[in-house]
Image (cartoon, rainbow, N blue to C red; front, side, top):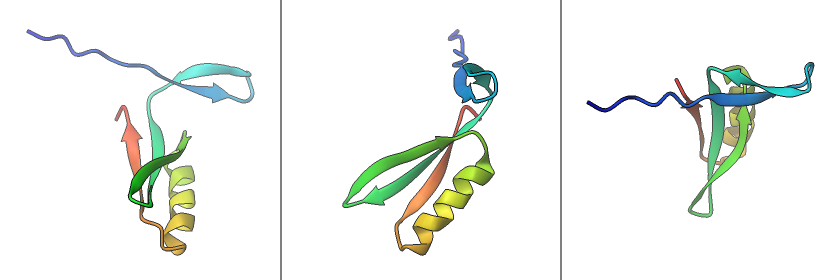
Length: 69
């Protein structure tokens, strides 16, 4: 039987000035000239959604990927 590997994600904590484990991150991806590009990684869905809306208003195809859900 295969054992499921639990990958840990880390995000930089500005207050503590170190990276700390986080349960979930959100990657913003856009389609540009037939290439998929990673724009940025966000700690909260709301941050990623705000940036996604900016790209969609410009007519750029984009989506949010949830990491380690």
